[in-house]
Image (cartoon, rainbow, N blue to C red):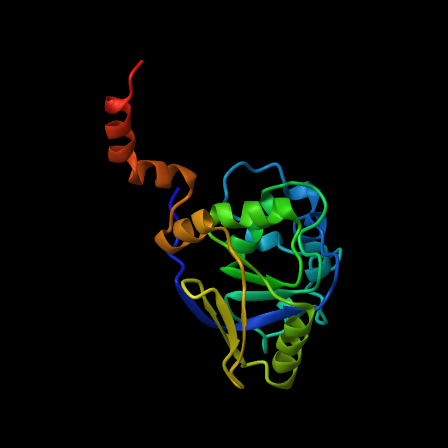
Length: 198
């Protein structure tokens, strides 16, 4: 399944300065019965967003109208815990296209890249600068430039490089998942197969 192409994303951001956010907090286990990648955004951070009577918790950031955007800024060690793909599905379905943190769990990072979410790992120091910029002005915009592999706080020009696997970078920029990539190089594969000697 192809996803939106990701080149340069300029957006305000939603701050979640909590460390060790695990996949059960991102999407509680009771919502994992569905097999389609739709509807999970409604239950993103469900137990943090809603009371037991389904009323919104006013002090949770996703319920605060002053914060919005396609970028989620999380604390260190984001996406730890179980390997459930649904955590990435929920983030994507909610509308986020990028998550910034100073450390990601490996499996979550892979799941995010596979469905079109860019996990951007920055230093602890730069992450702190982002949180402070958003705290000072919730309308602060960040620019995430995938071709140049940079994230910039546009209000002050502070910038940092991030690292991403070249294959995943190519796929994100073209809106490919792994199958789309193989389809894209199908002619090359067939030409190689014809030259092979058995």
